[in-house]
Image 1 (cartoon, rainbow, N blue to C red):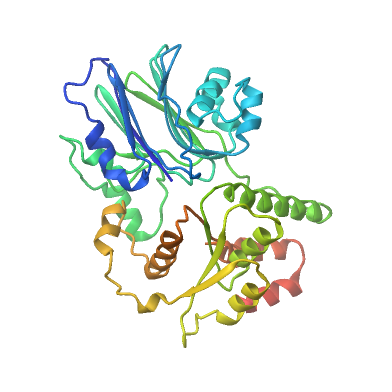
Image 2: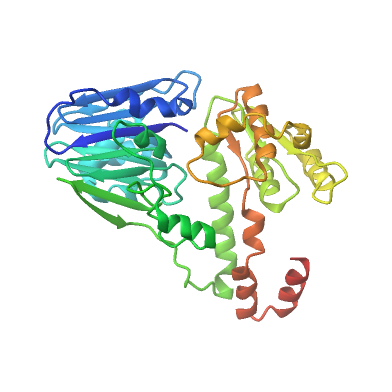
Length: 394
């Protein structure tokens, strides 16, 4: 994925020293197609470009008239042609920046709930002198900001802001405490004092130093699934899964699909195979842990035999556990130790070897099926036999 960064000086004076290089250089790894930075007066907007087609997707201009309107976007919008039609944009292949500018002109700060895709967007409205920040509901693309007297900074990674002169990296004691107790409640705060996280499904409006946030999307945990609606919901879920996989296969580059022995990744590979003629080359990659209880080789082999895709196995335990750790620490923005690091590094190496820019993974799907909410739902519906069997398996 790509990345963005920017600064708004509420006084509107041109920058004495352009902050673009310092703000964007830390995320060069997010922009294989290059980094852009453009400023007008006291507003600077930058982007790290990441293309999903061999002919690099045509980037739109950061600034457009009237307004002026400035757009910095790390976005993958689905059904762009349909969105262009609804907005009256004549070019169905219009750049993302042009579509977002048109969406803002049509819907204002309510545009985020009308977009479908993965996005982190910053949009400067010069006429109203306000900045809009928005993230998609599932939060696949990060966005952080820091409000200071006289200016506001935003970035895809906290280190972009921390690399600017005069900003000290101090820990946020409350978040450190939540981390130590494994009980996170202040999701808008980060490990760095003064740097806020725009939460998934939120928009923020900043004007003259004031920042107002609004949540535009939230799942409804109280919604009950009635038995007579079960088939309909399952069909809707199946169609949503099919479409989610289909839109992520819309690329000219090869695709890596992580295949474990679980229901989640196996389902993703099966659905990708059932889509028929898949445009990109798809390769499944499985991790082997020979002789260990966690090795899922028999289930992996059963799925791979039925899959039309080329299959490859890697052995993460043969890697040097410290290889590449320094680079990992630079990219991390929190003190998390990933015990599966070697596994993901092995998959990433294979993705790089075949030139893939998309990875399909079912990470977390199996865990969802074994969470207490699932078992509680079975109890509420009187499925006690199934509850006993699933609890025993879990």
